[in-house]
Image 1 (cartoon, rainbow, N blue to C red):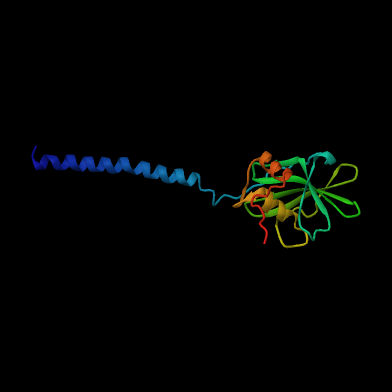
Image 2 (image 1 turned 180 degrees about the horizontal axis):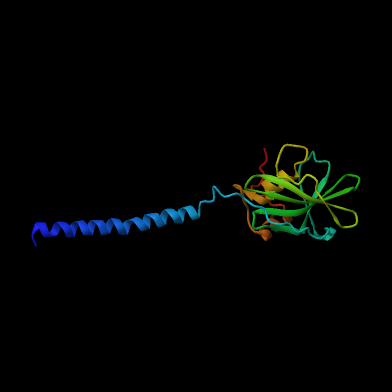
Length: 182
């Protein structure tokens, strides 16, 4: 075959190679775009209120030496939603025995908390009037959310285990990062 006859064959082969290479590059780009969650907005799932907490299902947890109330979480109410929110019933008790019951959520990805409802004496719920996500403040008077998030629920902006892992940590008072003396 002379050089003149090879020229068109080489050009045809080169064109075919370019044509064959373009679709995979496009497909790879489209594939990566399908998994790029950075532009997608987070959406919270619908919330179902749990039953009123029973004393035998409460798991107490330590907040701080300066806390004036004691705190416990209702183990039956603890759930991890598909939206990444850990929801639970929180019971706070004053030194005189007065109890406040609230159904709340913690979102590890944004280090935020939300109150959904407050428990009434008759076992029903009253919807929270301020049901917006708020940043968790760890050094404020109300540190219970910070303790739950940092010690038991969240690690590197993600939920630190499944439901049973979180409950086991709470029951055994085993924080994610053990406290050291000093």
